[in-house]
Amino acid sequence: MLGVILISSLLMYSQSIVNKLRNDNREIVQLYAEIIAATVKDESDANLSFVFDEIIKKVQFPLIYSDRNHIPIYSKNLPEDLNQKDLLKHQKTMSAQNKPISLDFIDSNSGKYLHIGFLYYGDSNLIKRLQWLPFLEIGAVAIFIILGFAGFSLIRNSEKRHIWVGMARETAHQLGTPVSALMGWVDIIKNNPQKLDDVLDEMSTDINRLEQIVDRFSKMGSEAKMEEYDLSNVIENVKIYLERRLPSIGKNVQINNQVEEGLLLNGNSILVSWALENIIKNAIDAIDHDKGKIEIKNIKGNNTIFITISDNGRGIPYKDRKNVFRPGFSSKSKGWGMGLSLVKRIIEDIHAGKIEVKESSKTEGTTIQISIPL
Image 1: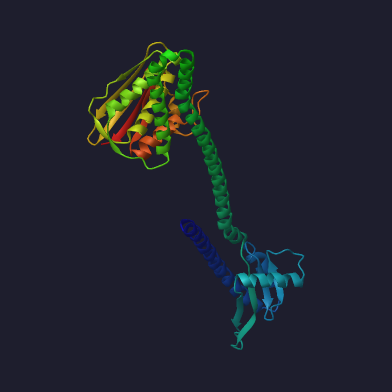
Image 2: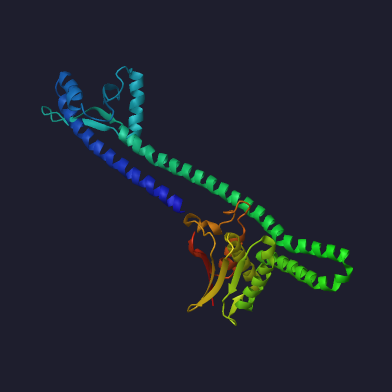
């Protein structure tokens, strides 16, 4: 509807200018008609030739003077080598564009009203250009819209591919650790049957982890169940799980949970723990020295709880601060850009919160802030 209104307004505006120019031209032609009518009183054609060649010299639109039988006599701003048949065609076209002006005068001797012919006039080049201008503008806008839509579709399809590939890799990544651990425990049982009782507890932990991963992915595609949970306990469980993995990846990082105990929030604890786990994992990956440190704190607002995750890693370039949450974007050579995009969906779409890069520098590291409504 907006497009129709804009196009209609453009056509109406250009048409109003065309009509104004046509009215101006008609006034000019009316004046010329009076001059021609006065000139025709003279029996000589010299005066009429003088009118067409000198007085009407600067007119910008085509003119044809015809007798009372519509036979062309003089023409202006038309090709000189036109025959009578061609002049009649031009005259017909002019008549369709503008109503011809009748050449009339009163004979001073007899006092009779005399009709001597017609003055035909066509549209100037300016009017013709103005008539085509709206269609050219609409065509140009249409081309931009088509190109924009094609570009948008290309980007959208590219993001879809990134999401599918990223989700597949994220699933494999999530399942990889507990599955590898279970395979290791099976080998230990085969080689050392006497350790069965000790290994069963660890296998139960990894099986619970697999169940949690399946639960996480199932909740992303359906309406998440909201419940009251202790934020500090959720963070502590994430901390314990990640600390167990640090030796295997060769990292020396200290994770400090400084969130106050007993802080109850309403939401989905499984998805929140997944979001926090992804952020802390990224923080661990960003630390490439032996004195790594990650601090998780909370600040209470009026109706919001703010959670900050700070590290002393290599930081995020300023140009990438908004891109890090976009699907498919990754600063890692082997990354697939799904972790933080899932975090953004969990925090903003499911929990009506907000996530942003609060601070980041090469020397001080990065602080990511999550705000969740109380």
